[in-house]
Length: 431
Image (cartoon, rainbow, N blue to C red):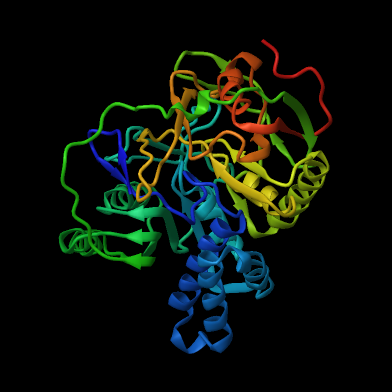
């Protein structure tokens, strides 16, 4: 655990399998979503359909999460199982932490699935089909931009995916909003951790009675918690980020991925517009099973190019905020010695105690919105030869420099700022 700098919630579970606050083997967070997919498969097909092969796959997934040396083989075995649910299912991942978790859970199913993640990006040209608040968060507004109007309008079950459930209020708020616009009979709430109290669990039952629906909860670990003490409200940066004697060069590379783009703009809290297009298949705008092959091809194409840029034995691949799943998948295909994690907007107090989850922290204004602080945790100088930062879309150079100024004091060799692009581009990151 770690102290969260938030008046609404003073603690944070620092996951070793999520790929957010701690660098991990990239197959580990992919397996965490896969394990949830297996639990859903058992829940929807019944125990009779959950044979010895499925028991073996779940055991492999768990062993792969615990022992990273088995993670890659376990992940590919699960993909090769080609699981299909008995009916169509829509998966919704919660921004920002569970965007990759939801995508990796959805991706385990070979057909009949669709996925979208919520976002806090303001895209003026699009209307959010559902909106809700995450009450304990420092960033409460969740938006959902579904390009396909049919994505939420059916009667299929919706699976809400989050990294942890503490009170269950976020899921309740989401279900209320969806049910008021796109009513259906069944919801599933899937999470790595479920810490709901008896009264929180009863709140689900009460909502079922009120709305005439069924809510099922799935998790890898369930229990109860009690936290006491005074919240830590001031971020104290670790001094390790300024101790490097030399600074690594920053190399800017535009990498062709062959994927589709969506020509819409974003607006930040300062009123500035970014006209750079978004990735169509990131998950923010909705994807379906038939999109997976093209996405797999794009990921392999990028990973091949980045593998060729590696010069050292160790590398760190960084996703940025909500943009987690594609960098995670790309990192998994970049060879040995690669770890993955993402920057985050969650402010956490660092401490060097061995039993504490966040040992170092660096804060900087977000490239997407300088009015929002982002953080990089648990990366010490010289730990990785090469650091690759993957951006979904172009941003002005002046906006990314606060992040790269930190990273060039952490990388042992080079910092690669990688901008995904539909075609080879030159002269970006201007301004």
